[in-house]
Each structure stands twice: as structure tokens, then as C-alpha cells.
Image (cartoon, rainbow, N blue to C red):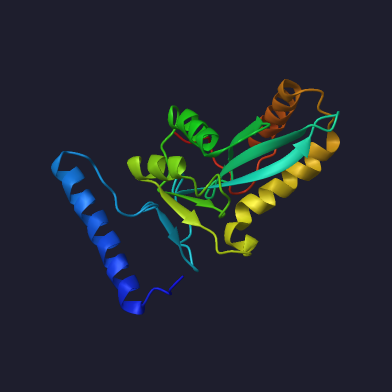
Length: 203
């Protein structure tokens, strides 16, 4: 088979690009909201500004554990950077981007959404469904740099407390049992183990 020449490849790429741009133009003219770029709600920066108010910035991360019979469970932890309040710990066996969105929607029923949310580059946090939700709600997804856990130090520290004080201290007989025990720990963490930076629950 003959090799494709450089000029032929360039012509092919030009045709593909032109076709794509034409399709976007026709869809927009027909009334479709076409976004040529994904994750316009995301940023990756070396330095992040400090959170100076409640709901300036939240952080999210995933943890893993298991039930008494070895079945794996996952935890989605969400904290407020300014107050260090644990906003939610969602427990499930399979958690994807749509589960993250559902958790954030539940929080939005009772409190103001943040300006930004610090997350790592896991597939749940870089999913299209979360990106679209963030864009629609004016929330910036602040992505950590690869292999830089210190970029999300607050949530890493909190997860260490969850592991040492809750997960390592309990047997979970079922998903419901895990949810109940973890939620009880979260409430105790927020309401009874006061920290110097932990203020009243925000709205």
C-alpha cells in the first residue's frame, strides 16, 4: 500500500476541520447550543487563592473501604475550605460522575454553592456530566496537578481523620450500616469536635 504524502494528509486534516466548523455553524444557526470546547468550567493552577469566606471553595475526594464480607464501598467526601466543615460523606458501591452531581444537588438545596471546588483528575471529577453541571451553576472545577496531593491538602487531611477515627474503628455489615455509622461520625465531627476555624453551619 502506498504511503500517504504529507500534502495529502494536510488536505485531509483541512477537510475534517472545515467539516467540523461548518457543522458547528449550521447547528448554531438552527438554534443548538454548541460548545466547541469541553471543561470550560475547569482550571489547573499552581497557586490557589485562600478561601476567605464560607462557600468560597469546597474540596471533594474519593476514599475506598469494604464491608465485613469483603465487598468494596466508596466514599465521596466534601469539605468547606474556610470552615473545614464536613458538608457530606456519600457512601456507595459504584460512584460515577452522575453520583457526584447528585450529591452536589442535594447540598444545593440547603446552602449556597461555592465559587470553586478543588478536585483531583479522577474520571468521576473530569466527567462530562460534572463539567456540564459546574458550567451551568457557575462553579469552577479546580483540578489538582498530577501527582500533587498537596494541591488538595485540606481534603487529604480530613480523609486521614475519616480513616483513622471511623473506617478503622468500625465493622460495616451492609451499605446501609456503613452509611448510618459514617454519617453519625460526620455529625459528631462537625458539632462536637470543635476546631478553631470551624464556624456555624453555613447557608
